[in-house]
Figure: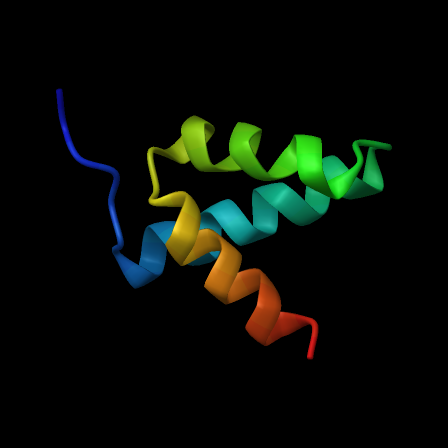
Length: 55
C-alpha cells in the first residue's frame, strides 16, 4: 500500500478539486476525504492547505 502524498503540487490540485466539489453542493466534511482519496494526498496536508486558504 502506498503512502498518501504530501507533494505541494498534488495538495494544491486536491484543494482545487475540493473547492469544485463544494461548488457542486458537497458539504465540506464529506468532500474532504473524497478529494484526498481522488488524488492520493495525505488528508492532514489537505486539511492544512484548506485551513490556510480560509483564514
